[in-house]
Length: 260
Image (tube, rainbow, N blue to C red):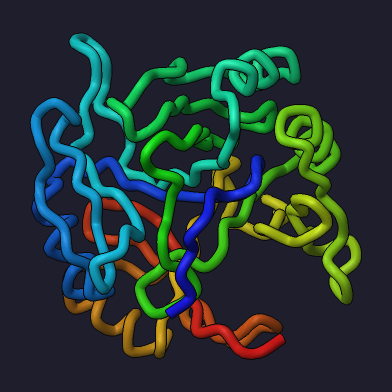
C-alpha cells in the first residue's frame, strides 16, 4: 500500500473533500464504488466524515451548508494544497490577485484551513496540518492519485501559484504546450490543463483523480448507481481514464495508471 507517513511539502495537494447535499447517500455511494468506510461525524465538526480505506484516511465527505440567506454551495470535490502557515498563505493569495472565500479557521487541533479561488476562477482549499496532515494512502484503488488545474490562462495561473506556494508550472515532457506539470521542489505533484479542451462554458477548476483497478468497470458501477459519464473511458499516456459525475453532480476522474 502506498502509505504517506509525513506531512506534505508546502504547495502539494494533500487532501480532497466533498460537500454533498445528501451526505449519507454520498457516503453510501463511495463506499460501494471505492470501498471507503465512513460515517457522519460529530456535531462540533459539522458532521464531517473522515473516509478511510483499509483504516487509513483518504478523503472527507461533509454536508453542504450555507450561511442563512445564502445559496447552498455546489456539490464539488475540493483539492487542498498544503501550507506551513495558513495566515501567511491567505495574505499571499490576496496579494497575488486571488479571492478568499472561506477565511482561515481552526478545525479543533486537527489543523487550520481556508478556501479561495485563484485569479482565473479555480477554487481550492489550503490545509495547515495540526494533528492531521492529509491523505494517509494514495495511488491505489479508491485513493487520490492526481490533482489537475483546468484554467483558461496558464501564464496567470503560473504567476499566482508561484507567488503563493512556490510552485512552478512548466510544460510536461513530451506534451509541450498542451499539458503542464504543477511542480513542487522540482517534482510534478499535479497537472495543469488548458480549459479550452473542456466543454464550452466549463469554469476553471481543480479536478480530482482517483486511482482504480479497472476504469471501465468502475464507470459501469457508477452509472448503475445513478452517476453520469462526461468523458467515456479512453487510453492516454498515463493510463486509461474517464471523467464522471456522481448522482449529486460532483465531477471527478478515475484512472487505471500504467508505469511511466
